[in-house]
Image (cartoon, rainbow, N blue to C red; front, side, top):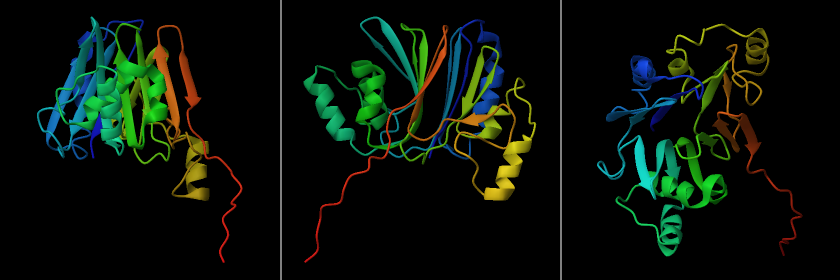
Length: 236
């Protein structure tokens, strides 16, 4: 189990807020006790707490790749079950690897296939990729929602994390209980409607959904859904 956190604002310089992203990331220590990493740029701050399972050195995060002069930065929580299949496909397309981690495979998949890479992943995950050249951040959550991913939007600020307490470590987000959210919790508990939380202005990315954040807009879409097919099997 790992934890991710981030702060995005394509309209302001965030570099003076390094202490805040560090505080947000520290709140996730329970999820990733082995190491911590921070990435800072003018418009995007990313944090990661890691529980080391495979490739201690090669899987360090935030993971940064520069390919053909373009920079890509990944923070990721999860596991790809089809890592070796994807690695083989990427090698066949001419991509090379520096490690054995699924983290690198996930990032290289985005570099190769863009946001369409999400349709190729079989696993449990929540991640954020900063595509510096395109000026966007790509957030995604696995099909079943095993890995959590919450966010808050405050004007041009998008703040996200694996846990709500990390979002609340950012002073721009207030811990205000939402009446509808708390009502749902008592009525449906422990569940609430997908996408909602018990806090005002804090939502979750719904399972099997993606979000792309750019200077122009925020786009959210569902990349996968359960299909209904006739069962033609018979038992004799």
